[in-house]
Length: 355
Image (cartoon, rainbow, N blue to C red; front, side, top):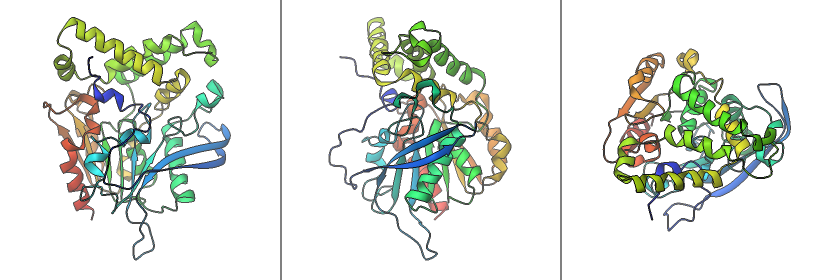
């Protein structure tokens, strides 16, 4: 049996069964906000913001929480995606960089993802057309109104969560000590990136079986959307090594498409990818006050380094640093964002700089 490439699995894993982790058991919680108002002016009578926490908050001499870490997942993912040996196993254990006996770790399910409110709950395409700004505001309210977190030691995220880290930085510039966006760019989603997102949405909506979002079973157009998504986050080097023959390549493709088709919802996916439509931190980067380390990898097909965008835009961030990881046998394209064994040294530097 061909082993599935792990990068893709992180996008939509359910809460995994863990071996002995060495860190406290994650605790699931949900904050329900009434009459939440979206940027579009739409409202939701009840908005569920779901999350996992690991560890306990600790307050400093000034009375503020001093050890809270917010970690945000990528598009189609959920907070539980980080509960893997490859991620949590390298960060949350005793003596590790984000030791959960020392830090209060918050893994939030983004709006429209995981166990937070989403179109597939019943409203389908009548669900409010949320944006990254709405998602960040919902998380801020969950932290301050529900968990009592009035300050964050660190804000970090992967892919979409990386983009939301930029939004956090300029929306609430005094709320955190440090920022670490992984696998993202601080500019409008355009060019090939937006085209691929549009391909996925169109593949679903052009399918008559989608029926305006009122389907009884997942439309076949979701499989076509999976084709675009697979190429969007692929790793040419690793996939050539993993599937060096025609038979293995076709087997891998079939396995990946089926996994996406059975693990995703068509309406949710439309909203998840379209939520980036107004994302554009570029005009606001000068407002980011906390030290920020932006980390991308050279084999990332979503944020290819030849664009030169990160290196140019980081100049606008007063205390910003751009880091490009070279291609190695260990990098996994876009999915390098979830391998702290590769970029952990920079997290250690950021934490030391902001101690």
